Amino acid sequence: MAAAQSGSDGSFTRYWVAATISSFGTAVTAVAMPVLVVQVLGASPVEVGIVNAAQFVPYAVLGLLAGVYVDRWRRRRVLVWASVGRGLALGLIPVLWLTGVLEIWSLVVLLLIFGSLAVFGLAASQSLLPQIVPRARLLSANSRLDQTDAAAQTAGPALGGGLVGLLGAPVTIAIDAVSYLVEAALIARLRLTEPARASAADGPPQPRSVRREIGQGLRWTYRHVSLAPLAISTHLWFFANAGALTVLALFALRDLALSPAAYGLLFAVAGITTLVGAAVAPWAGRSIGAGRSIVIARVVYPVAWLLIAATALAGVGGAGALVALFVALALQGFVAGLENPNEMAYRQAVTPDALLGRTNATMRSANRTMAALGALVAGVVVAATGIAPALVGVVVVFIAAGVVAVASPLRHARHDDGDAAA
Image (cartoon, rainbow, N blue to C red; front, side):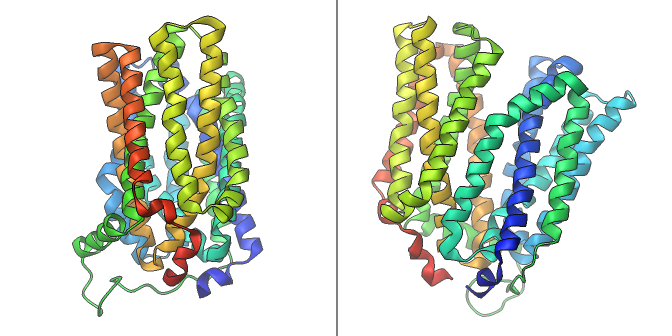
């Protein structure tokens, strides 16, 4: 692909640095935002739920539309302005707090704006990478990005906790706002030439139609021999994972009475093993193929959560339960690191450039919507039946996601399947 070949090592380095800064900023805000909502603003449980939901709503409402325009517009420009907008939206939070007018509802509005811009920014980011590196290097590039993100998720919460203690939650969020502005400046300086894109992905030129272009993205995603089962399996995975994390928080913090430090350490360990998995991912993709790497991960996820479910069903507590949780999350982290670079690289390699924005946005929109539903359903199931039955339900959905992957042509997919799309 000519455009991808034009991307230099220097351009990828700048892109990687921008992604790294943004990942650490996001990890810091992941700690600061709950503190702001619960402790600074004194939100009720319902208000906390509304704040969390505000981060998912834009994906459900704008996801498909974003894909159309990311395929029409220059993706670098979309990413730059989305980053600037997100930085300004977050930057208004400490400003409103300092002036004494920050309330839950003004925070929700800012998060809706932030989330709307994130829909466009993330679709553009995922679709821009094939213009920066050749398709043959997409796997290693995605692996490097995932390693960095895993490092941010491991070290970021500790950094965020320290900054919140030193500066307070609102000022800490301002640091994340600055990280988005730095990201925008770095992306704006990328040396690449994006190809001109037609208004339609197939057939003779036609007048532009948002509905038709959305339909093209949906058909490509859900009719492709390997992408379709990958999409369906991933949607189920997001539903199960969001539900699992919701139940895990209640199980670990309420039933097992883990300290916040111990609870945070669980995810730090998962971050470390994700880093290891991402390091192994290029070798796995080249040796056994992208599809088999993804399938292996989808088979292991239910095993990890079955260990947690068995712990809850058996009423195991104390050190035994803690060991089970650490082993399960370490296992989940490793296969997540193994899978994600292969999934992203395969999707980028096999999808024509003209459809890449819509494919990425379609997947992300559906995934985030399923995550919101999974978290909501898990909460209702816990309230109705308890922790152990809810964990069993989570395992069943993880198994369903694995069965879809195993029983499909996805298991034969390789990164060089995308050569025809280049």
